Picture 1 (cartoon, rainbow, N blue to C red):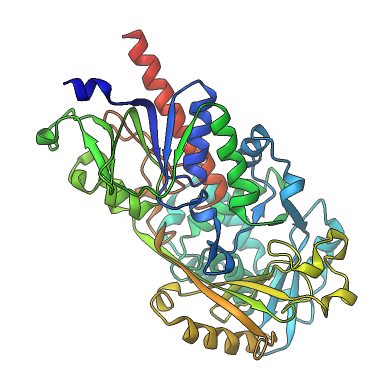
Picture 2 (picture 1 turned 90 degrees about the vertical axis):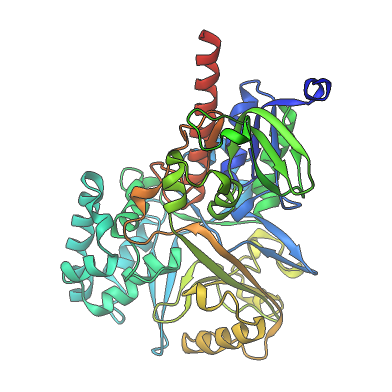
Length: 480
């Protein structure tokens, strides 16, 4: 009993320091709560992290900041981060046409790049005919309307929805495929139409904010670490390199009984941490593993039923830039679904540190290159040898008109096996709420139900909602 009395207790223990965990920890710390964040990696960021892999700087995957985000920039501002200091904006995205040595230039900033957006609509005639362009209008008009008023779109794939609205084959390949598999690595045949339109729907009322931002540095360094430092300044505590093995149930013998309570977590090293609220903000598979002893609980049935999907990226250092510009690029018809030349943005080389030199053609020849790309059909690459993946990448990039052979100086395959909740048909109704119904247990993560989807914005929103659950519960307890 004396040992129990001496146990250090927190108002909340948050498992995971991705954006969901950081968002939750910030909101609770700002309210004066005593918060502990436990992270299994030696760095913060989760699926939005950057780190050094045996001498090469890499990131968890190619990420882009979307201009219509609101929760994420609000969090960054509270933590003293100026968006203009960590992001450079893109007004175009390139879509390379496989085997044709052509590209479609897509304007992605209706206000900030109005002229480029107009040119992308009325131009590109050598790539898309007017028949191709017009065929997507009823597709998008009906899709956004359907997304706003009905979740029945989750019962049909984006490919089926495109066929239903008579989108031409070329428009499907060069417009729909990059906007689906180019972002979330699922083929259009699997991708839920509801998730597809739901991802872009927030851009409609905020069209004036729409543009794409490339990070000016690793995401852990420029985005996540400042949030960590702010939470620490508010009294929060962080423990890194500490994998959590399970939740602590107040009465483990009553684990299957009604009315159980979670009072903390235990780690693989044998340590135990106790709190009024336990927030599981780890990835979906990690959350399932931590809560596995409670798998049969009715309150967690959606969590365990929600399917997952993987991601695979190849990141390469080159003796020269692979692309002329550092902008988001898509490769429909190949497994090179999206990629970017980052030697002048996220991974700036020694000769290109000046922002004014981002697209200076005279300097490009002197720079080293840094290409990051997301692979479609990731499950095929998860267990492949890196050398084999590299050979596939060099071959398929060549078909897109990007010559890499003989220019790769170093590379890393970075995979996230089953780390994402699946955007497949029927998945959306399985997303669990942050409030679990189990006393003391709260969930946070982009897989939980929010107005957003599997994005950085969705993660931040989920963290805020999780913190709100904890605060509401405390208020109820105070009144009682």
